[in-house]
Length: 187
Figure 1 (spheres, rainbow, N blue to C red):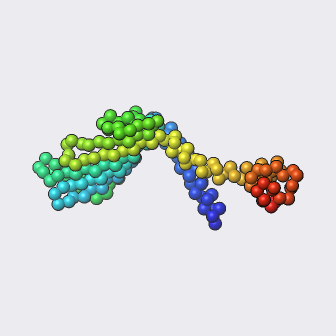
Figure 2: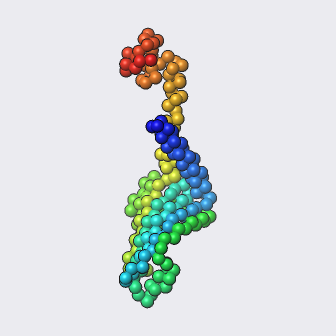
Figure 3: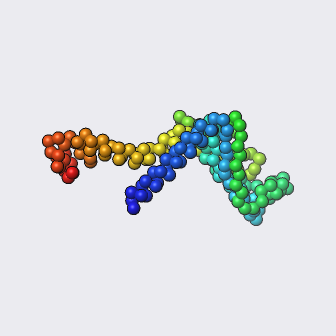
């Protein structure tokens, strides 16, 4: 049962790695933004929370914002634009930018394609945006490594058996073919 679970999970990780590699290649021609907006009308304000994922130029940006529209005559039109409930969205755009270099974001730190960004919007009383940027090649690599390790195990075992080596530790078994003197594995 454990073996089936390991093989299934590593196969899913491999499929995700392939999809991420495709998204990485696609991100240089077309950017995507996928996410959701949850809006609640409270007693004296309208609050919207946004969670989205943006891709572009080899990076992915995880984006979270909270915007509060106070109950004033100026902000009432925004209440009509944001009905209560959950909405999802997908935006595709050409000529994408690198998510680590967003023009309106203040960089808290940036290093080798990673970034932490923060924004405040002056039009609203309470509006904050937090964003984290991760390079897509790293995501692809992290998803592919467990699959590679699990899938290469049987090949390593067959090679060790063929070369008369211990299956467990790789010790040369020409002198003692029945038991490994290094780790004690019985063959």
